[in-house]
Length: 598
Image (cartoon, rainbow, N blue to C red; front, top):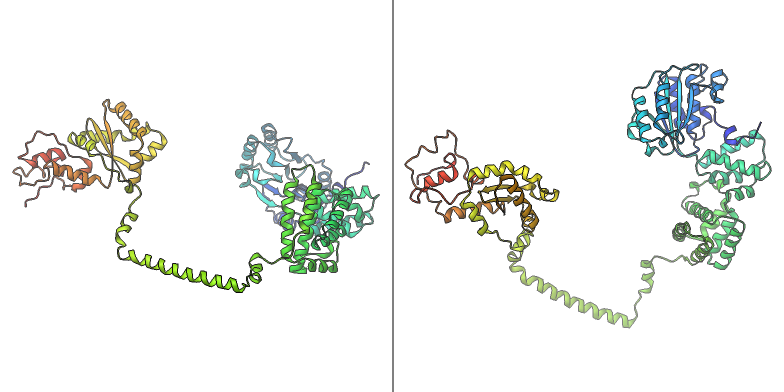
């Protein structure tokens, strides 16, 4: 039989064999024991953390008739068939290459049929985030109304790409990264079973290089075994992973902290000449300095044996550089690491980095360094005394100037509280308003109010938003007066000649007549009405002979202000000036005119 990779030979066959996923495995086992099995699951997590293995173990567990504490027996025909991938009722699909609608529709159609051998038909869809939008929609229908005895297990490394409508219909399990300790223990167990000689430090190098993936760790271990003739040695693990030996890193660290840049450059060249990757060298150095920093804070924060060094080594390195220097070194390493991603000459950056690290000194902060240097001489003391006297004089002068205008604070305070639009002294154009008021009628105002929304629909979106807080308050056959709730919007409308043109064109299209549009602020509109009534003699009150007019409506008279808003006054009428009451009734309507006898 051909050789099989370690991660295939030692693939977990029981929940207890899954490394570093105790929470997930315990939850799945309890669900199987209590028969609380859902119709759909989502296994999400980084690569090589056991998602597909857990799906296959779950498929065996739900179909095994000889369960032991929620674990499959792995001895019955069903378990063996699933392990060998020969059971037709457990279907594993790679969504990366089967991501179309037709494939998912085929699954949906076949899922309706009952399982042939097992109790449950299990569909394992790997890398489900690769499905197209149409495929997700086809799968959604099946998840909404799942057939009996069918279980879907979706596995993905990028759950954020899955629609929320899918996630809300499944039970989600998040697989975490495998710790270096767990990876080390698993590799140690496998090598013991294979009776292969190994160095523990080499296993720690592999576990750290795997970066949380158990499959990656076993793949690297496979490479080391092939490289070193079926044994695991530290030097071979460092060569295969491209890592730098701890001894070289320790030597480099002591040289840069001792400001021996020339020696550090030679050490760095030895590292590169040995075939080590420059990017990996920086990553290893950052991790190395991080371990030293944590050891300074508390030796219990790191596992010394996993680093390949001893407590004595860490004690020496902790004494070689304080935390402030280590912070600066990490900052410099991070900066060079970003720049090296886009260069074809990493050795140049590493040389500059080495010189820069060698120049970092254990200096106090600038504030602290200023304190001992601040001891002034006798001449400096005289100069300081003169400056202090000058400052006191200037301060006294400022206090006098501030006290002088304090008696009259009211006058400058008033314009400061005024709105910004009033500071521009914009005046309402009464010369355009009065002609419209002279011919204004209630019928024209009602007509314009009825057409107002239709008029707004003819304007652009910015123009409609500007007129959203405005309304027509007076209208005649030749013009319309529009009042704005806010002064700054009124000013903006006055400055917009395109708005006036668009409104006048819209009115002409809707009414068939040309009408001029005039804007007024809402807070000034009552004053404009009062002045117009006063100037045209409409404010004179006389006892009326026909007092029955206001009572014929059968309603209580409205407020004069509201009445004025609904019907502006008109100048031209058929009633003579000798009868102002009749004229007011004709202008404003007899139902809203209130006659008082003085």
